[in-house]
Amino acid sequence: MNNFRKYWQSFKEYLQIEKNASPYTVKYYLNDLEGFFSFLNAEGIANLYEVDGRIVRVFLNALYDQQLSRRSVSRKISTLRTFYKYLEREDVVTTNPFSAIRLPKTESTIPGFLYTKELEKLFEVNDLTHPLGQRDQALLELLYATGMRVSECQQLVLENIDFFIGTVFVMGKGRKERYIPYGKFAEIALETYIQDGRKTLLAKSNQPTDVLFLNNRGFPLTERGIRDVLNRMVKKAALTVHVHPHKLRHTFATHLLNEGADLRSVQELLGHENLSTTQIYTHVTKDHLRRVYMKSHPRAND
Image (cartoon, rainbow, N blue to C red):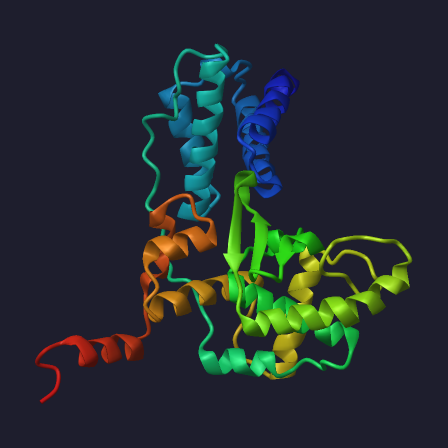
């Protein structure tokens, strides 16, 4: 394993500095590399340039023996393809043994989303006379109004919110910047929280910070904290569905498309690099599809 450590470190720096990869992406890439290096050591392979098509097939068989999902296997292959492409650039190897490997087809899943009535229950559970209730309402309104990722929400600072034009500045994956508009409900919730509840929470810590969302001790709310807030709201609303921050992102996209927003606009709002990523949200409810048909087809009605 020590023979490979320097390449592990240099690849990590490449992901962080040149690719601007998110901490989660770096973590998964490096974990996949650790597993691959362990496999090479077990096979008695001391150099990365020794890996050829035969070794790759043995490695793939080892992955399938672990009964990993197709998605996990696909990710590991993609990681190693990127790793060897980097090694080619650095003249460590002359060929990429993973370049000809076809990724296994992954199961196509439709993102879950909340219906309007389920959302209404969530919006009604918070005590808006209490600082934490004001914070939770602002958090919920903002996540649904913008469709931002939980990591993007957790990083927000006060100056990211522009009340004059009603937009929030977001730093997305790969440090890509975008501005997302928000509506009246989010505006009211944010103003109430910032002018009232946030000041009360901040006084508890006695440590100034411009981070937007604070915990009950006045310190910045973590991503785990945001998920816990949502879980508590779900319990209060007595919802039987599982709600996580990403489900609000799914709901944001689905509701926009169901109401006639074009795919390119939704792509830009979500911060997707490829349109194909956004197309997963083009599913619609049967009721909506029927309404569109009955309204639009010339011979749907008398």
